[in-house]
Length: 211
Ligand SMILES: C[S@@+](CC[C@H](N)C(=O)[O-])C[C@H]1O[C@@H](n2cnc3c(N)ncnc32)[C@H](O)[C@@H]1O
Image 1 (spheres, rainbow, N blue to C red):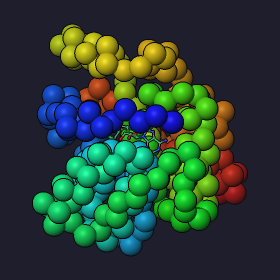
Image 2 (cartoon, helix red, strand yellow):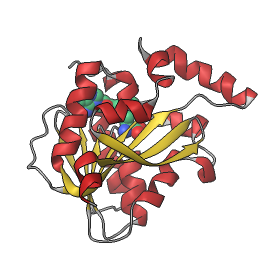
Image 3 (cartoon, rainbow, N blue to C red):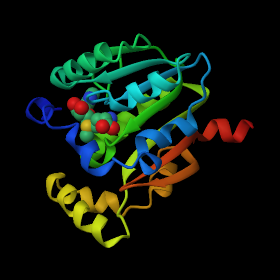
Image 4 (cartoon, rainbow, N blue to C red):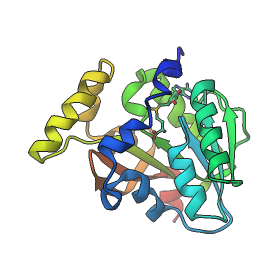
């Protein structure tokens, strides 16, 4: 898959400044509610400039985070941010999320943030397959996705996102994500609405049947 982030990498973190500047309602902060500070492993799939990985690593010191992305430019920025913040519990991995070069059942938490809306359906399928494969049986998958805001000003701000996103974005935005993940054998356990986004905690169907 062609990754278009070499140009965008310079500007990518500006999105946080405009859309996720209210910490209480930011999906970046909401993630922490799903991740305990214990010696667990987290995989941040399509980590981009590593914003989520850093948030997790900074406030969950016992957690070891692997930030995976295909774009060298995005990972370079993630690396600079880790160095600047003197973070040593994030490792960066240049890899394809559709074919992750890591063994099965390795991670307690797998994060897929702001990715699924912008990839083709075969890529969505491959990413979810890999997320399930590398996560532990009793592990969880956390998905952050865009959500249509209800407030007038946020609706106007959100229209900019809509313009920038690829074809198929609106359809995915209005899709029933619980049903979508069910089709991929994932159960939505929790959902939290944040500014412009929702954070979903998913579990593998097999885990639900056993417990
Ligand atoms: C919109 S950014 C999301 C970044 C980050 N997760 C966040 O929440 O801000 C999407 C990222 O997915 C990466 N990406 C797209 N396809 C990929 C693939 N097949 N394997 C690995 N990374 C991929 C891009 O390089 C980009 O950094």
